[in-house]
Length: 414
Image (tube, rainbow, N blue to C red; front, side, top):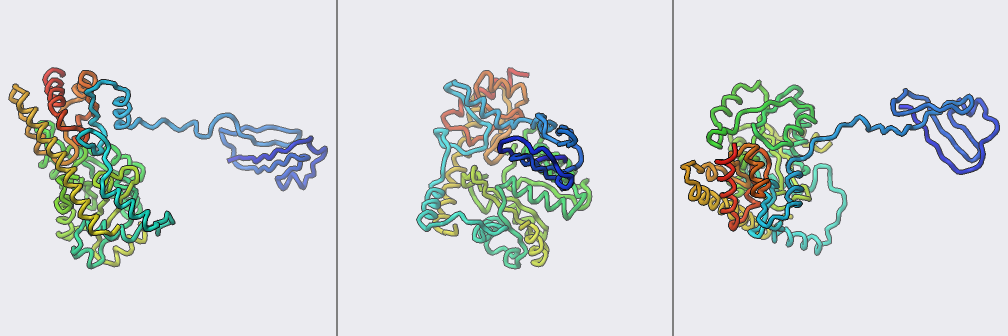
């Protein structure tokens, strides 16, 4: 683009300019100094003449004028509306962040202890290797696959740190785009909203497979399998490893949560697995995660890791496991009590058992957009418009209130 760099001091310009100075593109104007170069024109630049000299100067129109406004984050909008509501019974069931029974943010005790230990040991904040902290990569792979899994012993796993789950998935998308050009990714319908953005930005084609059945408020397993069977050869299937978002920490057991990944690996399948420590460690802001690529050989794993490169304390680990079980247990108790209230208070005979069949932090209510609006406008319950609620933001004390809101909105709003 055409450009100019102007350095101003003071005083009047010199009376004469040599052709040599002009040809070199540098003008000495007394204590004014002007450097310029001729390049292609730009719609955001204007030409200004000074005698026989033409300069290109920046106009008041921004170079970024043509950038469109990104759509608002639906979760952020829910939180902002919740903050502005002064109703004493208001509930924020939009954000997928764990809360205590008093509905306050929770920092795990084990995280506090780990922070203290790091400070006492004098840990610094120096640059890490491109692939991240080696000790972290070792234990995160052990958590996912199991310490004695053959794929680890055979060095067939390439693991590098990523920016939580989303950043790790973005690395996976970049890997697919670069080394599997044209390969399609199949994404569940529905899925977490950012999944589609990730693959769009990486220029990876995707399509949806059936997942949610609104009639049963559960899994459309037959539709899912049929769509996967129809996928082109070489496609990648995006699965939610332990608890589906938005329809379904799981049960608090690390082995149970990792069972699906281990099952695929045991069957000899090559897998790309993104990990996040936002919810199970409460490290939402730190963006801690990893990407693991299981390959058919150690040589392939080494090559993959080379491309991905462009707190090891057993007592704390046991304590973390116990805290996860406590957090997951509270969510399961809330889920059970919500179901109990829905079943006992709704006299229509509607079957609410789908609430118990779902697992994890989230639950689909089966409410449509109009009913969700009623939940917010009448009952001050803030949630996303697809009917998803975060049970982590619900207390046992408010389960009855939420059940009343759901029953009223379901039966009285079309």
